[in-house]
Amino acid sequence: MDAVSCAINALSAQAPPKHLGGNNVGRKSVTFPKDIWGDYFLKISPNEEKLDSWRVRAKELKEKVFDILSCAKGAEQVHIIDALYHLGVSYQFEKEIEEALKNMLTTYNDDTSTEDDLYTLALRFRLLRQNGFHASTKALNKFKDAHGSFREDLASDVMGLLSLYEASYAGTVDDLILDEALAFTKIHLKAALPHLDSHLAQRVSHSLELPLHKRIQRLEAREFISLCEKDDSIVIKELLEFAKLDYNILQALHQWELKELTKWWKKLNLVGKMTFARDRMTEIYFYVSGFFFEPQYSRGRIISSKILAICSVVDDEYDVYGTLDELQVFTDAICRLDVAAMENLPEYVKPLYEAIFFSLKEFEEELAREGNAYRVNYLREEVKNLCKSYLQETKWLHQRYIPTLEEYLLVSEISSTYTVIFNGCFVGCGEIATKEVFEWFQAFPKLLSDSARIGRIADDIMSCKFEQSRGHCPSAVECCMEEHQCTKEVALGNLDGVLGRAWKDMNKACMRPTPFPMEVLRPIVNLARMAEISYQYEDGYTFSGGKTKERISMLYKDPIPV
Image (cartoon, rainbow, N blue to C red; front, side, top):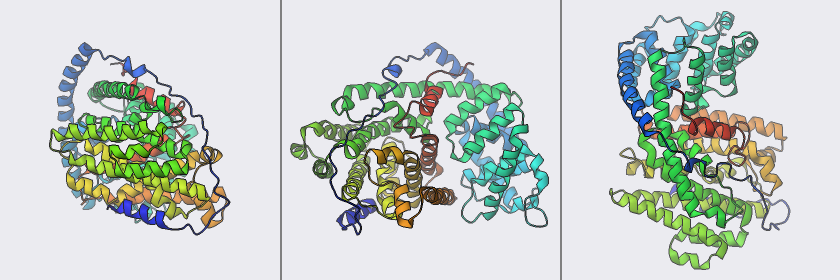
């Protein structure tokens, strides 16, 4: 039995030490906003002739960008690599960037650089850290005064401040100087904001709202390309044109994937049979593609989106509709996952059970042709763990029990669906998805736990008011308030500290040497980034008509004019 399952079973067996009130919780009635996309992505047909011409031109430009990157040295090389990340095309030059950063690290950590430019030094530090290289913070001491504080004359260097601000989020718990840098840069960037030109003000306000370290690359690329179109001094012309073409070519693939998923979802008609559930196929794909958007992960995105769409209905079955007795029977059946187990289920929930059972079978048959059917067993186990965690939360609701924060997170990090998402993604991946990777996922390593923790707490902070109004198990906010006997404001402050620590621990876990390459680790961090994005303004999954709709439109509707 895996570590996650053992922990949930142990909690389930415990009698709760504290109850609040009675245990009368009936079937709930909640009306969620309807699907806003309908058949939209079924109707999109890419212009193949235009796509072919884009591919030809992109191939030519890629060679030019390669030459530019290869010839660049020193600060110029640092700026070009940064531009590749901002424009979303770094994946096209991974080997070249890796080699450049290795050489850069030697100079940086030997402290042989005489670089006095705050912008470039902080940028070099951030690029090294975000790629898992242990760049020292010592070089930043040259920007401090005799009293050990950052020099006040730096306040006039807005680009330097912005670069240091972004770099400060790449720190670990040991990097106290980065905490100082964050506080210093925030104060001065906010003070400078009213006096900046519109383009720079846009960049600064965007970063103050959500730092680059917590943003996803694909959205950043779309927004950065728009910024570069307004100011042609930011990046080289050939690089910008290449980024636009690459964006459009990849968008066409994403549109095709959305089309296939929409067809599958409409045919399954699960929310037509279980009308209490949220209908969010497009939003799920947005979430999944946020943590790996590259073309080689196409099948992983499709498989993960399918299983997550079904699990979203499972979530609503536990949260909204099912009675405790029905949910116990459903969980028992899921733990067996065979056709015979369906006989004892209520009629209304059988379509959901069938969707899980036959989808897993479908994945298994597809992967069997490659000798990788064993991967689905790991996904199957995580679906079981997910349902066990949902049941435990339902029991807490019925018992009116408020767990401690750590007790809550032990269960809710699983109910966040992160373990299902990752197993679903890597089930459909290529050679990087080794048996060792799946075994590591099943052990629920701290990196995955921290990412899930960020997702759960970000969700709870934004959605707790709505969820408590409809009858829901305690959120992280209520657990923190009860445990510390404090106000909601104090609890939110405490949870913000938990989030900050989780981010720093993830940064440390990605420092080399690591158990697996960055191709495995980066999507885990990206999922935490997607949580920050999705719950930045509201519960962007349940109420997807606002910022989420705007972002989906930006990513998947129209190509960038070339």
